[in-house]
Image 1 (spheres, rainbow, N blue to C red):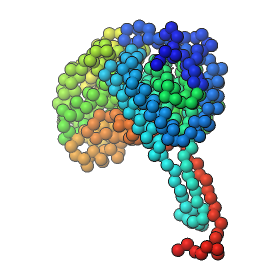
Image 2 (image 1 turned 30 degrees about the vertical axis):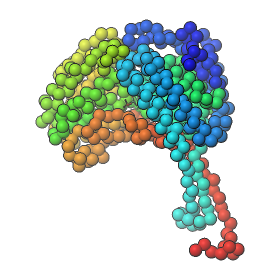
Image 3 (image 1 turned 120 degrees about the vertical axis):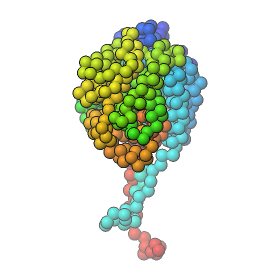
Image 4 (image 1 turned 180 degrees about the vertical axis):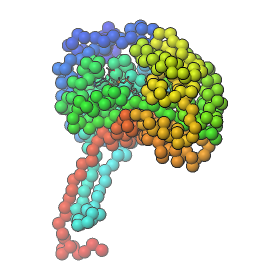
Length: 493
Ligand code: NAP
Ligand code: G3H
């Protein structure tokens, strides 16, 4: 099934339905974060090759856009079936390539199968509407608008390292269902898993040129791709820094951006503390905190803080650390640079007097889960996104202070509120400047048909299956102006 995507462990790119090698002769070695072992090599494509890929996507667009939606859905459904058949192989590659624990890697792939199926079905349900002119002063019933949804053209999908299968498919499948062609730039660390995904879509029978891939470092080839004149929409997930850069260097290109986060858990006095602590630990530490929606700070009322801190510390002490192929939660971070950054936040918190409850142990890029109590707002860890296994706890005097600190963040992805008072929960939820508020649950993206969005530095636009299809299509209105016929056929009663 995957034989043609590589030669001697050098992975190729999908172009016009063929797996091709780059003329650059410039390879990037992908080493496993687990043990530095080589997983494979990918190719750094040239600007000229990028031009060919984007032109091919542009010229293949019409064939795909003209296909009946039901036929597009059949192909997308088939890709879900092929992904499911190959889920174990792809989960294994994922674990090797990004050190995601094998249980989470399997669940990423199976969630993607479900996502693709739901998208195929949802795409068939997206309908236009008919509007009548007389709703607006001065216009009559004889003016009718037939509003349909049209694809935008070539969608550039750029995904991050932490979900190279799921966050790639969650752009590609809705883009395709909307009738677009796709240029797909996967994360460098994660490219190999992502190329397997591209092969799955190709094997399902996508017409040649409708999905094409570009590998190469974002820092080298990224700007060339995003500024390409034939790209009609950019769907980007990654850091706020790169998202902001893309906004700055592109002009008049519609973009959807899912960016960083600093999700807060606000814990009130009447909360079920065991439930809260359990959710907070799962939310903060799964995949070692390398999730945009990871809980990245706790804001707890002083009167219950001691008990909550004890529970969190106890649950964290039970987390298993080690090789992602074993039954563990905490695995090596994506690279040493990421581990150095998290260590810098830990050292700063210690220097400024935070109370270390557990952790601050490191073996290379493997960081043990770390919890700080008595974190104050002058510490970097109060504001910066670690993308690693460290959780700061800030004690607050009252709800207002919790809301103020939550909203002072540059980010606005999600927040959690733990309380047994639904009125308090709703009141606080309305005050929080985030895309989603979870009541009595950890922050998380799924289920995948819910809207998913960030405000402030956390993003622009909305994803989630139907929202993504709509975001990657546009309304087209055809307005019919009927001539008066009342003299011939009588008045409409
Ligand atoms: P990143 O460094 O921003 O990279 C994301 C993607 O952008 C990668 O494919 C990267 O390619 C590419 N890229 C880098 N520079 C580029 C440029 N100039 N032009 C075009 N593409 C460029 O992020 P990451 O480290 O992979 O992921 C972690 C970050 O993503 C965290 O901040 C996390 O919160 C955020 N994230 C957000 C969400 C969300 O839905 N809100 C989901 C997941 C992750 P290379 O890999 O080749 O550099
Ligand atoms: O990393 C960002 C992902 O969108 C988070 O998804 O909440 O399902 O882990 P998740």
